[in-house]
Length: 433
Image (cartoon, rainbow, N blue to C red; front, side, top):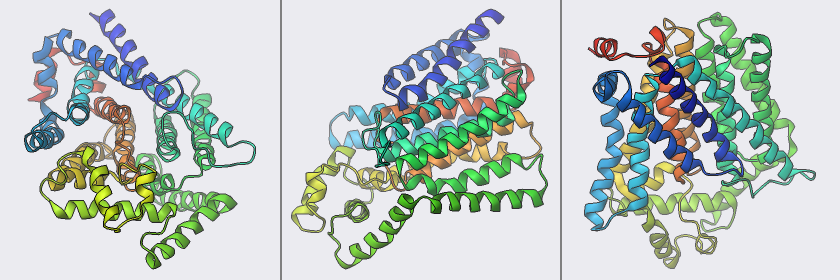
């Protein structure tokens, strides 16, 4: 049985590592990797020691999380009844985000934690590869790259930054015999990630840096004095601000935001990057106000409702000609599509796991647990902040990545995982009780 546990652990760690690489490179097939991982994890849940009953017992502490995530499925059920038709894509998204984390969590709780932590190297490789793409596409005249693999530049830079931050947090895990070299490589990955963020010339990723910095300081709090933490925090903020200000293109893009907001106030249908986004936000808010309970009823109604607002001259027809099918904001999009229930379901997807990770970041827990908690918290809050200016849950592959990261990080931050690297049926039942 130990051999089977090792084989399962190896397969899962390789699939988790491959997922971000497939997302941010031309390799593609992220959804295929996600489904292979779900199948593997499902078999692990059924064929572990004690079978599915033992898996159910090990997941007992997560019943509240399961109910919170299932809210998205409930919203989809209401939409199906309201529309009198199946919403295939939306149902798949709901299942990925609601069921996926629990399947991955149930399997990972039975596997070898130190092996699963090795998946971080896949995230580091993805950050390096994405930076390479960004620099290559912007070289030599430093124009903003538009044709990045599989994403627009904003989503691409957000995910690139997140993966670099996750790699930096994993400094608290010693994954090889070469501790100093490993630490240096992880720090260098963070630096490379910042280079990639600058190369993409996007602005939304910078909004999440204070959040990532706070999580990092919380993670370091067990080993560093409070005074040094404050000094490190202030230094980090100053360095990030200096890095941003030192780049003339980034400074110009920041000034563009101010200028375009002012122009949009004077002419609400002006055509500019910021004003178009404001118009789309206004359109989503208008759709939500028409029916706060159900919204438009589905996400595919947004373009049609947008056309009506263009016809009423409430927003620019540029939004139609450029085929903007969403408002570049996850919260506003789900409010426009599914009303208040949709917004509550989305907030639960962010905050229900984030609450667990925040508790596990407590100073009295082992460092290995706290590192996983910091990683999970950075994913939850990172997606939440990124989603204010971009539709992060636009594609299936990104929702699959979020689901996998939740299950993987929850398992590695579970204090029980440190007991023996596995949860046999009897011990899992005692721990759950």
